Image 1 (cartoon, helix red, strand yellow):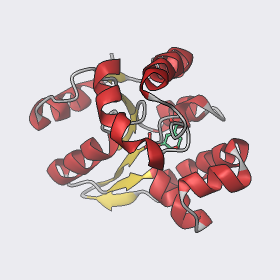
Image 2 (cartoon, protein in one colour):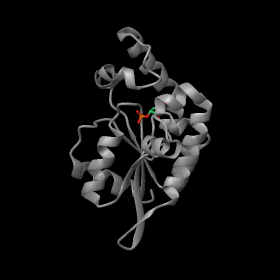
Image 3 (spheres, helix red, strand yellow):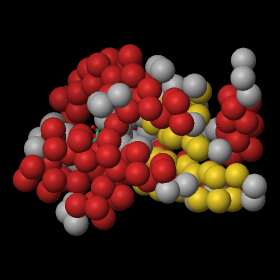
Image 4 (cartoon, rainbow, N blue to C red):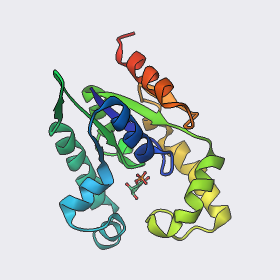
Amino acid sequence: MQIFLIGFMGSGKNYWAEKLSHEMNIPWFDLDSEIEKRQGQRIRDIFSDRGEGFFRRLEADVLRSVSRNRHKVGSGYSSIVATGGGAPCFHDNMDWMNQHGITVWLNPSVEELEARLSPERAHRPLLQNLDDDKLKEFIKSKIDERQEFYSKAKLEIKNTNIAVPAFINLILHAQKPN
Ligand code: S3P
């Protein structure tokens, strides 16, 4: 089973990828770390040296190659990919992910995102110049802008504090055809 976790920065994609990987015995990848390995540079340096357009092309490319290198588990090939917050919105990535696996949108409230992201601003290229008021505005407007892509996900989870077995159950149900 190929599972793509999508959602805004700070929505818990890496946290959940790791948890699900452990419980479901499926390997997981952080798309940003794979990009950094491929490019030999930190994400914030790729943004500042090469620009966002270059980063988005690399992101689309690495998404496809990471997902192709699927790992055999039992009788099938599986992996969990924690994508970057903007990944679904560029280069048809959302449609591609929907064709190749189950997309799960982690969608906590703006207030939760703000609390998680506020102390991390310095490390995040899109947030580093925002003060407290601007951070909240930015989160709201970016989510509005990205909604049309995020909402194509097969499954949406608003309560990201859900128990692990309940989360897995939702994925297994989403896997079944309607
Ligand atoms: C981005 C999210 C980041 C990273 C890059 C751009 C975005 O990933 O890909 O800084 O456009 O929302 P995380 O969502 O894993 O922090």
